[in-house]
Length: 176
Image (tube, one colour):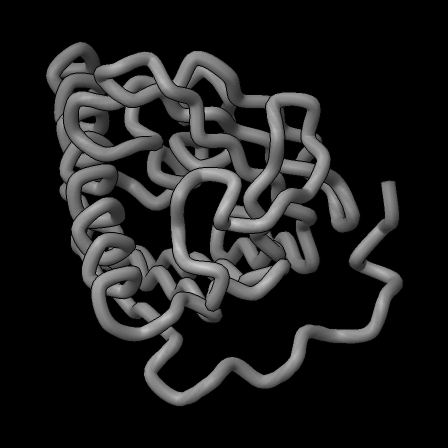
């Protein structure tokens, strides 16, 4: 498998192809960081409502991979593979993101019935800042085609982040 960390940088995303979401979580930054970097925690929240995440493998190092498969209610799997480009614990993650088959091979978005306008490689960045025991998260997902694909991605991320918030709240309740 090629190592994208040593390949030429991504092309500049097209205007309108960058999804940015900001969220504040009532949790310390370290807890949010662990929710993004511990495979068992990722499985609890990564995917829209009604989806599950049966597979998550993380090699948390620059050039390492983040492989995840989410499962729809009709039991169809949607997999992606990412290669970490930047890791600054517990503050920032930057990774490429591509659709993948269950073995981790990069495939076109059309494999999953999505637009062929998706690039082979997108870029995901997550920045976490803490203030007063709460964490502000800024997520940027670059390379998403505009229109319905952007709308679907936004809704999918919002639902996933709602699940993340519930996971963090449950963990907080257990600590209290």
